[in-house]
Length: 314
Image (cartoon, rainbow, N blue to C red; front, side, top):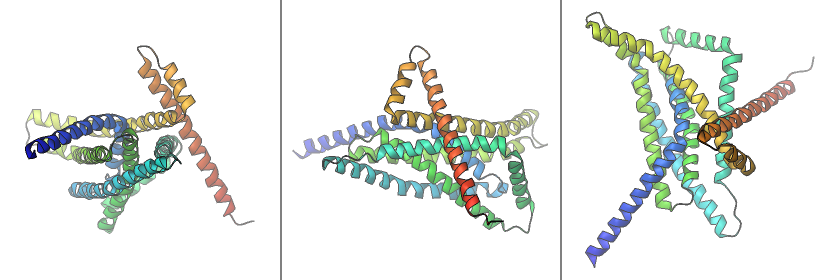
């Protein structure tokens, strides 16, 4: 009896792991759009650090990201459990869908804000970059405090993006058992954290690799490769920034459209034929752009109103 029970348990565990692997693959596809933004933002956050301190800063943010996930995964499971319990009590209250919609709206808002900032505040961007360069080059600046500010900012950014990834993943596995949900959430959290910060570490050290290969004592082939890497690194960062912004509109718009049944059905009806996937992506992206622009306009109007209310009378 004992051997059969053992093999039955082993079979159950193997089946659960297989389900987790399959669902993790599905969830990875749904959250991949957030990764472009996550990768670009974190690589940008750790820029402006002295070369010899880049990897320690990435490592510090990586540890902070793990702590974020350790907070978010149990919180997500608690929300799913609460929603299931409310359903059994005869008072079903959707909790995951509003969180998904909130995350989608935030993605659209962030994408629209990035575009508005890029086209309307170019001078401020240039001044910020110049201030970073002066801070790093100035020996009087407390570099430890400067690093800590960068690390805290990157961890805050990671928390928001990690929350989006966890909520999207939870929406994918909301109907599964608790062990399956836990397995998928943990797998996604670890894969995303290791993958993102491994790539961030590689990206921020690309220029060092290029400089090493292009040193005068290197051969012609090595020097040519080094120069190629030095020319490629800034283009890669620009591509990641653009891809991240596009991904925010596609993913955020898709989440919002999926949460509004008539809009979701209309997009599905229009996304037919061999290029249906393209039409679907364009329509979801259009929803994302419109929603983001509307949210930016509303927030800007509220900010102006608050500014006026605090303005002393003449």
